[in-house]
Length: 455
Image 1 (cartoon, rainbow, N blue to C red):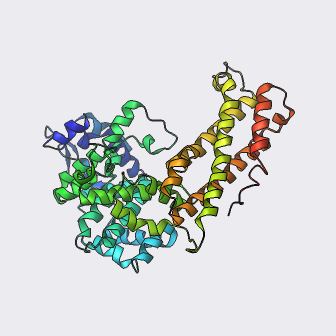
Image 2: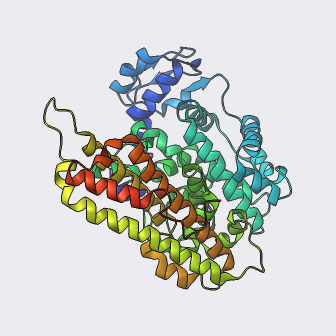
Image 3: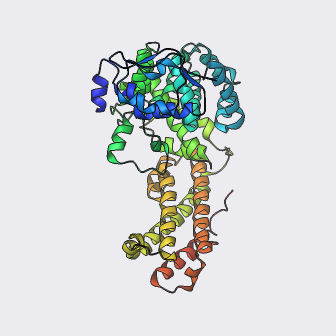
């Protein structure tokens, strides 16, 4: 069913009751935990499939997917150690101890109690608690992401002057924004999985699915449902599922939009997520709510001496940008003549040559580095616009210099690692060996002697 068709529905779509992926996750959970029925499970024709008090296991899976169910299966289930407000509070305390971002949120608010207060009034009906338990046990990374995003959204709202009472529905929207992912194929959460065009269309609908999950409970306000639907929109209209712009997006939806990107950056980048995100937000000011961005930027910045002269930083950034841009362009020129043979599939039962593996490895690492720079808005191709935008921004220029130092260091590491893995390249036995050795030696140790070392 298309996204627009889902939005026009007046009743809960049937695939929310009978999702094979959701049912599979439940039966897999039942292999580890004690999942039982607290009421019988019926088909939509009134045929009893499972008695009350029965223990669910994987053997019931085929039975449960054979016929449409009268109501969502989790309306009939309980599990030991189910998620509750107290367990959520305990997990928040753990995140405050183990996750720098959450610790900074709490410290900026004067303590974790302000983040916890709205949770104590948040509705958590049994079917939703069951889904969160399923998420925690089967997809823990999704559960931790949901908690972190909820906390970022609460921080933004509290800093924006919302009362703790106003924050209660926002806490629910943040915690439950990705609950629709439980109905999607688990492989989609694997970063290595390449989505097909059809899968991408279905993935876009996960926010719609989450909205319907909440609507079915009849305890969450329309504002909560709307915010969950909007958490992947952008102020410039480039988001989904409806491509809304600016005032068309609700206040809670705008909180979730920014909280989503803040959480995603800190989960994706172990190294300097704050400066990366700070630059990206500065460079994409039309996509995210500017007033809220100003609330989060102080938590992302690096310490800078206010008396520092900006001109040396500009010169440093230009030098490092030239190094990075030159190395990327040089590799593209060297790589082009060997693109077809290096990337062609190996013949049956023929082992790829070491040099082919080296080209593929090096190409992949450099593309990943370029992508990281582009996502942070700091790719050499973006440098002209970025320098113009940051010309009077000492903090932003210092962050850009820090990221470029890191990128130059990574470039050196990639080049040196390639030669360590394939030392035979230095024999320069073939044109492609010659090209690889030339690039690695120029980009390796000492190639960035003119710029400051990595901090």
